[in-house]
Image 1: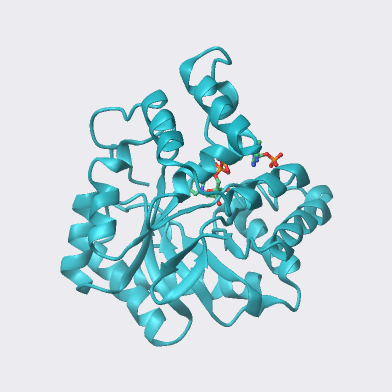
Image 2 (image 1 turned 180 degrees about the vertical axis):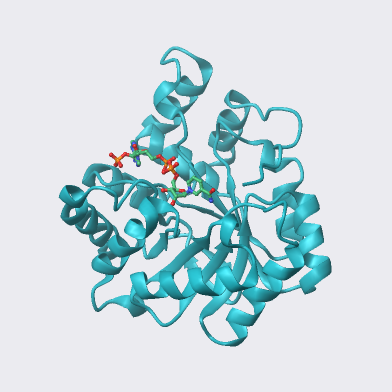
Length: 282
Ligand SMILES: NC(=O)c1ccc[n+]([C@@H]2O[C@H](COP(=O)([O-])OP(=O)(O)OC[C@H]3O[C@@H](n4cnc5c(N)ncnc54)[C@H](OP(=O)(O)O)[C@@H]3O)[C@@H](O)[C@H]2O)c1
């Protein structure tokens, strides 16, 4: 399995997303089992958030981990409406309780917030780290300018990760966000890494390129799309999957090394759109 270093901790380059898990009690057991299936196969980075099913996804994560907490690297996120220090402390305590863990490995501000000063949120995160409630802190959906602002507040070295929308079909982060992260030792977590692949025209150049590389490596096009992402330094992909066959493919993608020819074929079939990703505030 490819690994990426978050702070000073190596983690698998393929993790497990949990958005849309935990909202339906009838699915709880199946979702728990799916995460556990991935965990047992080395997909030990679990990405969740207080917002997912109002904390329900964090409960699924806790149930999947059972007494294997020490094997996992848990990422959770505070919703921007809880970005002021007091609300953040309350959110963090609630997430730790739902996750049944003393320490969250990586805790992110889920989206930028326009009203709470960034300084207040970042200092609250740094304080949580000093108190041992989180191991690392980070952000999500941050542009290069926002990352620069965060660095000017906290100094270098503390922001461990930026979780962003990044996939073959959404490559705008390559213009400035990913280079900035790479230059400053910030791990990039690619969310929605399989975004819209199912909507591709089966005769179009994108799907045809995926099929070509898929045949070369005997891995499905979705697995190839993941392998393309994590074949770059510092990139972690966090697909959400509850189907065992999907989890097997995602796990296999973690071991695959694409050739330069494969990578070039895919990059030209999925050209990067011009312009920066617009910053969204919640
Ligand atoms: N920070 C943020 O703002 C943010 C935003 C969005 C998402 N996220 C995180 O990123 C995670 C992933 O993003 P996402 O859930 O939007 O989308 P995604 O992982 O790109 O796509 C999920 C869909 O892909 C399917 N799938 C997974 N593996 C597959 C495979 N090998 N072959 C075919 N289909 C496959 C899943 O099906 P099955 O479930 O049926 O297996 C599911 O329908 C989220 O769960 C969440 O943890 C973060």
